[in-house]
Image 1 (spheres, one colour):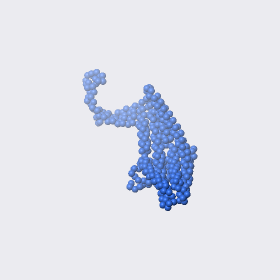
Image 2 (cartoon, helix red, strand yellow):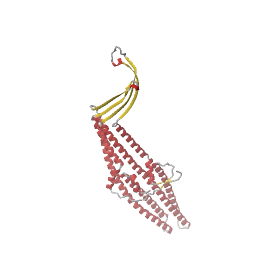
Image 3 (cartoon, helix red, strand yellow):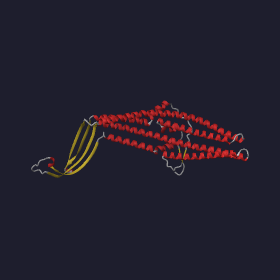
Image 4 (cartoon, helix red, strand yellow):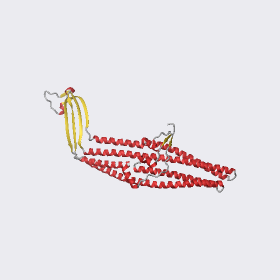
Length: 422
């Protein structure tokens, strides 16, 4: 669009959930799992085919070992055979196919949970990029304020120099400080524009589209939740953990399928059709067969399948246990980051207030002639440092809240609750 469009955090997340490549790939993996389930299910369902054939045939009876018979030619034909027939096969009892079908259903569930986890990861990625862009925008505002202060100091020093109150070195110092602030502003503006490009890439926005950030995400305490409640909620909500459990169940069913290869199976085959020399004189014929198959010796195939299934099951169980521990680690880490970042924000807010007072008093002392520009510049640098600490602390606190929502497995639903915004 030719105009600058406002993008809120919710807008960015919605766009990311539609266009992010990782989520698109996860959706295709789910479709692949559904296709594998249909293939496994097809072994349990009837298989029906039809065939219509019209054959011209000539046969040498001697080729079948028939001696010459008086009155019967050795070469029979050519003659015509017409056959229209339907064939049906059905596995009445095959435990291996049954367990494989159930395992594929669990794999479909695992793929759904994986796609849901991918959505949480996209929310985390988009939210982090949006918060980083907000932090860069805040740095621009802080740099502009510091530049205005430096310009005012330079003008004040120049006026006092003309009045013969201060030395020329004070004017030079204030001019250098003003140019330093100009440089910082240029760097902050460039970093902000690059971060906006990164955000646009993350949410699938055209690179040339101009947009603004409509949410500011100020500091706000995290919703109250205990560590025990967080762990219980994560084990019920995390898509990757639920997917791991489904894959573990699929591995258990796959092992049962491998063991079932040793058991008999019952198959039913049949066909019905019209057979004759021509379609007009064809007569109905049919065949029906029920077969009970007993595996006797398969060259170690069953043992090999069972060993592979055992190994796959052990791997799934180990991965599930590891993931459970990693979830607890992520939640505990998020709690630590939240508490530390909240304390840092409170200290940084106090430091900014003190630094602003220091700048005001140092400028008053400079105007009164009891201090030079060194003291004022030092106060301005202290204010710049405290502003940067505050911006970084608020950013870290918001990212920690977003990381906690992802650790709980509810990033998509709780992003607004944890971060605010529109």
